[in-house]
Image 1 (tube, rainbow, N blue to C red):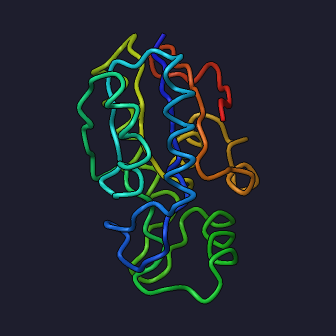
Image 2: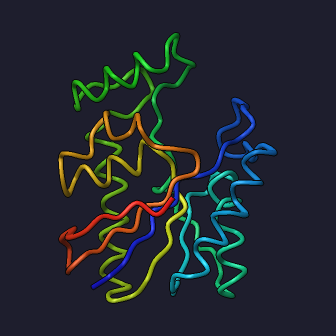
Length: 182
């Protein structure tokens, strides 16, 4: 069995600079709690989206277990649109209702899911029977889970917290158990 801990980043200070958006004060507080909770788990390797808020959320875990954080560009959040959308929740609903739809310059659910699942499957293949932390984002994380089980959908995404932790057990390339830790 391979365990993947999907860790959705903590609250961040809004900025249009997706790559460098840092955690907020509340995010830093929550990150300490994430690290404390993860100390009781075993961790063999840590991956993260290249976005600062995702890295910052898993830094304490990597430090505690004396692990390097391996960044992977395809673990970044889905690109919704090239320009800010008028109503974020309506825009998210639209891409979930039609998985092939994309806003100009954005990714459809199908496209974003494909790039993220490809990385996840490579990680599962390369780190069989290990305990893996992945610092990630809400929408891309749910799209990865949705690939394995369609009950992980927009309703599931809407109830996620910042941060959030899901312990997912894989047997080969099959998702066999999901447990919320946060």
